Length: 199
Ligand SMILES: [Zn+2]
Image 1: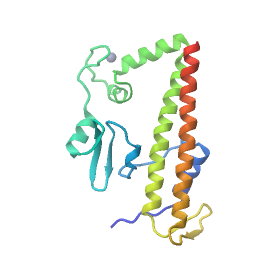
Image 2 (image 1 turned 30 degrees about the vertical axis):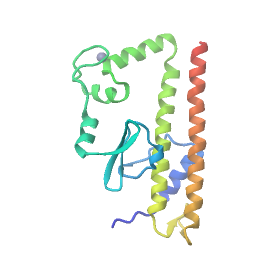
Image 3 (image 1 turned 180 degrees about the vertical axis):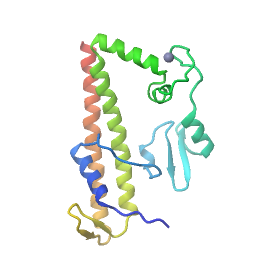
Image 4 (image 1 turned 90 degrees about the vertical axis):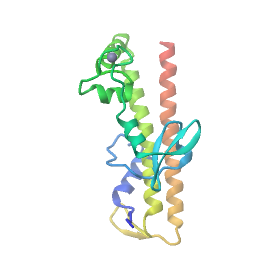
């Protein structure tokens, strides 16, 4: 069995989470486990050896093929302008905006003219930060709960854990920090929407 250790970079991740530096690169985060209650309709995640999703409010397994399909599926033509999506930048833009690159450019150009672009961009960043908080929380909780009885502290000292007491403490700290960050980011998102309406 592969043993995961709670390393220095995990401590840094926890610190970033607590201090709100969620924009920093978080590296590869594929295959870690997430708590079921954090999932919403349509999400796909790996738990144990199975891939799960929530469909019509029910948690269920999906085959690898379904995941691949979901990942690569993109309609042939843009739902916005109807043009065939074949440009290199169409795919990443479709993933985020559900329209072709040209439509995104046009949409953002209109926002710039209306002076709403900065708000829109900030909102995108905040939404992305929320996703990162979710990912980091899961990653850290997973790292803590699968690691051995010791971890390397910030100053490189190996700390021994006795009877899992520190695991509990860290779990609580991470959950609290995530909650605070999430609330902060959500408030930011809502404030922007409020500002937009009065403009
Ligand atoms: Zn288009």
